[in-house]
Amino acid sequence: MRWENLTLESDHSRADATLFGADAVTTRTIDTPEFRGITFHEIRARSIINRVPGASRMPFEWTVNPYRGCTHACVYCFARKTHSYLDLDTGLGFDSQIVVKVNAPELLRRQLASPRWQGEHIAMGTNVDCYQRAEGRYRLMPGILSALRDHANPYSILTKGTLILRDLELLKQSAEVTDVGVCVSVGFTDPELWRTVEPGTPAPERRLDVVRTLTEHGLGCGVLMAPVIPFLSDHPAQLRATVRAIAASGATSVTPLVLHLRPGAREWFMAWLGREHPHLVRRYERLYANGAYAPKWYQRRITRQVHDLAQEYGIGPTRAGMPRRIREPEPTEHALTEPTQLSLL
Image (cartoon, rainbow, N blue to C red; front, side, top):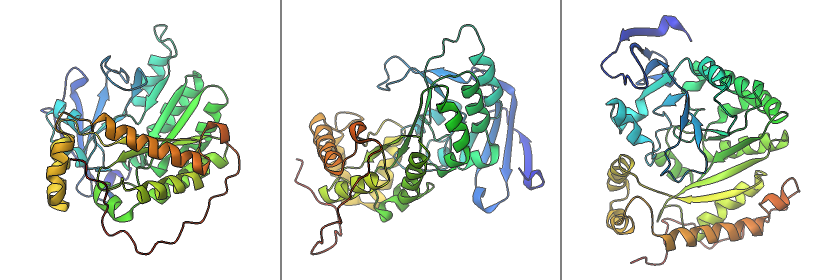
């Protein structure tokens, strides 16, 4: 960090004593263009390996999250609600008030060495992105990956960030001693939708370049095609374009996930939808009338379409590492001006 550009002030009022000591919070603002308007709350966490609640749908039990809040500013991010636990705003506050667990690397190394730790798989990037812009300043992930490598502890990373390539050598070293899984999130390739829905993220094509680079270095990389956004990125032509681009990147797998709107994210997303696509508000209210998740029939339809396209383009474990011949896109009579689909209701 360029410390001469920082201003410091103590901020005790927003500390959660169950997570860190109230006397261990420092608030920093950085006067550089890339971080203008962003406030960092540096803390010394008391624990870094977190158990996933038993009721969660997540397919893993343990996570490491060195950050809270995310400058990716994805309007649909389900993690927004977690900011309210620290009495921070779940809207703009989630995008601009970033909690940084500055002692994460040494704390993780200590917890991995504990005789109580049994070497279970650890998932990262499942709450907020561990390779968001803040990581370029704080550089927590090299220490975290080194600790996991040194203890041969299996782990996985989900990210939208291109900064993961900075740690390519650490990933390769880890893969020599334990199981390492890397997945990049690319829900769609529409540039206009990306600019409004995921304004702080690298462009989809840059994320697919990450997939390509990791694969070229022997690290199989899957793509989480998430979220598929109803009425905005779910047209068959859009799904085909996205899967085709994923296949061309060399991804070993593609897993679709339909948008879900949990409390905290739902309010922020619906406010955005009302500004940008007001004609869709009623359709969303109907589609998500029964809770945070789209109806099962809709999820199954999207999954089936994506899996069929993946098979067509040769994505999947049975074809991993094999050369792919991607067909040129068929010419269309006119470009899509607005996604359409069969009436839902």
